[in-house]
Image (cartoon, rainbow, N blue to C red):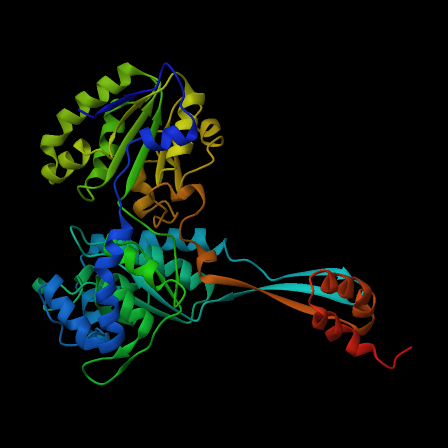
Length: 440
């Protein structure tokens, strides 16, 4: 069922692999030109433009942008007990993991009388995006809010698209998750206009201020990603997140039923989702195809999943051995990478590029989506080669504090002057020597 790329007779170079491997097409540059007028309109006309775009794209015009606090509390009170319990488990486990990520300030004694301290200071105000397209993602609220709170961010704004079927409010599950996490500022706005409003701020329909933020995080579609790229610099952003991906590195010990179920689970997100199997075993590849054919008819979103599995972004890559398999998955740099091999932990320890790694048969990606404690906002499209997932560090800035005594500065006057002269910046040197004029 999955199209195949057979690399058993040779291992292409990293450059060739990037061209050969299944990958979703994500043309952010084209989307940039589509979102630029949206961003410009929000900058110029504020909430009026936001409401017009909400009506055009979401088919509803919210009465106000900021959701009333009592509405958030009501959504939490109405939340089904089992869903609330699941969210509470997700929150508690995520808090345990992310609490350990918080860095302490570091002071280095460079010389006698001279120290450099790195202070880790949280961003003051952050906008967190929760998608609301084909599915609703209260789990994304958890994954954005928990590390921000662990970092010490003072003000959090959750943005999610208004829903016509919910009276112009975001989905009740989004509202309930925000209330559960004690976030009381939720804006009913989605897409590129959400990023623009977070960046520029505005005035709500009731006259209350919508203060701009310093950083925008969270996953979304290509238009949200393009808006983040366009506004980067005015606001900080996390890594660009495109269509979701799973890669499974497996040998003949893997259970094809498990592999097929995991590939299906990611294809469920949308038609552009990527599901990739990298395996040393043609027999396993055949068995996975058979398991896919058996499991697909019983899934709820069979048409969406089937289209994703047939797409150019999905497929099976046959390799000669695990070394070649590791080279392939490192070149692919998957958002989610499962290792279903013998001695899976040792194999996982050899992986260099992945957003998150799931080891062995009992750690499926779905666990990471909800209850592993790890963060599921991860880099896609090969960005795991250079970027990591959302964490406490996303919301912290390292600030160097330089504290030198008179003698400590005096000890390097000659070095500073020499380097400043070499760079033809004599005033830099004079800024030091001026402090010692008239001293012996």
